[in-house]
Image (cartoon, rainbow, N blue to C red):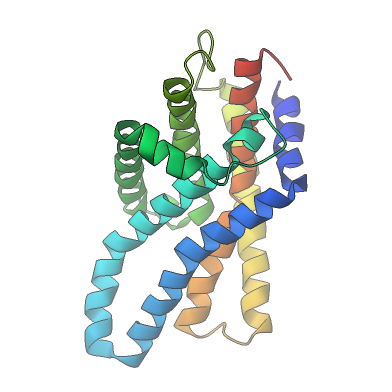
Length: 228
């Protein structure tokens, strides 16, 4: 089951919609970070206030980016379809607003808690994995509320011990690879010593955290479908 989930999760990377959704994620999460970095560099007095506000603002941005990304790619991640659902986030907001705002609220709380955890709070890919996993759980509930009967039977949202260990190991490896790639990109554009360059590293590194999210989603989708 674990290796089937690994293969199915990696297969998500073969869909072009994944990269379009990834660009949306980066745009929502990355562009405001650049603006914040530029403000902090140009005006130290205002930059200090902006920096404090960003501690609470950035988790909200990440939640918004994560929600759009997961809802858009949900059919592909779960293996229900080979096509992403670009309009699905907006349908969720209009057809199941209560569930959607509940999702946002839970993700905001989780993001803030993660941000204040020593050491682990600095691993952006871990944030992506945890928030993505929570979002996928809620997506199944949203799907069932919009189309009753889609989710049949009992779904185990918490995988077994070794499956969880595998997710953590792969998440750690992907986090390391992501930060290395981001560091190379930053160095290549000669911004390694600038605050803006450091900001660029985090969203790029976070993208690599989606791989274990895809694996977890494939595992959930297999339960709904009755197997791979």
